[in-house]
Image (tube, rainbow, N blue to C red; front, side):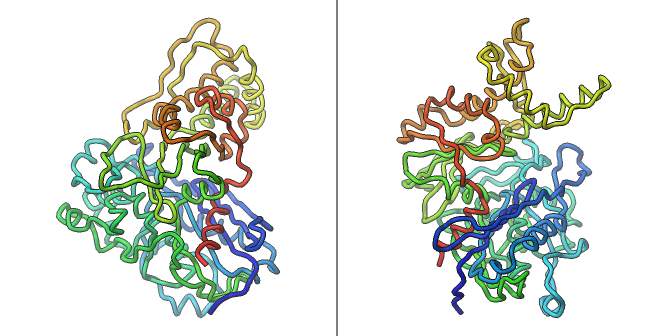
Length: 465
């Protein structure tokens, strides 16, 4: 059945919030949108080493956003595109499709039938643990926070947790399964590659070596689809969206945030939100001849192409931590300043020429995947560098310098990159950070006004038709 609607629905399940757009098929313009913070983080029994989120809260945020979109537009939706935070893994039990279809549809799952989402920020797999895992044949390394590493950890440390469930996927894969009513989990090559132990060209898991090492291969998604392929059809009408509309296999939020922004082959995209990524499209990349490097990785993109990515764990989260620390210090001194005022003052002070100093901050509060033991440090502190504006300017500079150490200006020039398109709330709202991008990369910086992963998911759904 082919739907003649005028719109597509794009959904992005991010690390901190859900964003949803309705996109016009003809104009490629967003005609309606909604967003909601999930507030899904839950304390981990591993303390700061663990990072997990409450899946029902994420699903509730999606349902809430869709409920607030115009019903007359939802009725004209012809397809749905979904993406979300990469690397993380959730587990769930097979659900009864007939039972779900016999009652009014709501995007939810019983807490007893789903695990937490163990996110990309999870640090339970330290270097010693990772060294015990089988060597992967994939060109992509395996890091802590990657789905397969997390499942290996549970298999060896808490096998009883895995015995509760018989399915797993990214949280966006779960959403697709719930919307389609299917217990056969489909995963895209984009999300599978983000888990580790996945051969991107063959489209296969490295099950033989994983099984020998005690990995629960029976949990892995069996259906591997390319970006743009349909995972199923909407099982029931959803706030007016007609039952039966096709739903694309869930995609990675990085790829979908890049898709609306990259217009020319000589452009790179810099995204700074919770974390930070600098990336460009690599159309001639050959995984078979690639030697692993720790600081640049190559993930499946669209149309058989790859994204070359410098992915830092330290982005807007580092700056936000500094702001929260300042706010706490003021409270300790007996008065309170709203975070919005702290941000406003820091950005104002940091823009001044006098804020540029010899101070260098290496803001690696979370380490890096290629160097997990690294920590933050400060050098070049003098009597002249202790002004608040100078500290903030040095912190912003450190975020960009860290990316530059991973993917340098010389490398971008070698690849023919002549312009950087900036994206992400951490960059778009911070003019000091923008100044540091230009200072380090000496390339024109254009702030993207359409670099939204939900938009990218919608565009991918259109392209798949």
